[in-house]
Length: 292
Image (cartoon, rainbow, N blue to C red; front, side):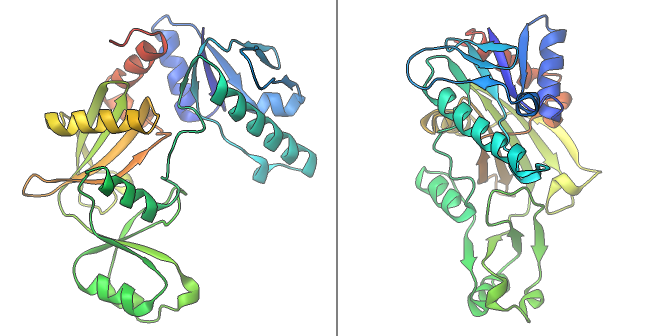
């Protein structure tokens, strides 16, 4: 049995379930918002015992594609907020210890929520990562920005657009406004690579914007990562405990692939539509145990 666990209305979950249905693969969708609304679940931690969320019985031997979101901060009242926290805490603990395949287990070793730590980890793993600085020192930040083209990014894992930064913008910077994360901007093409098990699905993106996600005129073309790099991303994805990951690279004029990040819960549907559903096909094969 294949389950998808998350918010049924969320675009990536909806895309996955629609694609599975079109392929004739039965997927049981477990909508967390319904479970919270009806306050109806039973989860036992320890041993391969089934769980229950509303009308769904969850087989610990099954395969799970998960995009778990805790919406407690958006709850209308304290009681609903607590139900969100209790459910997501218990569910993530249950998914961490069952014997079935979970894409991805909540306990995976991801440091993507801290960009400075994440970039250092990628560099230590052997990837080329652009120089960066994080801090609240006006002098240090200005010196970095003056040394070359600079991009400002979110320090945390919160979704935010990146943009080019002019050194003059730091003229009135006050330490209380920090910390700020600056990274050396690499001019060139963007590459997005989705790793699913041992398969890699990539696109190269030509855009005039610093962040191609903000560019409605960006041009996407299927792309094949160089062999050694493809092997490296597959190997490191597995080392992180993941079976699905979204990798971002910049390709400089000299062909160097600079690694920007690896996303442990990629919203991959935007890319999958352009690739003819290949990412979902690989994900379904993985969940069905058909990957070599």
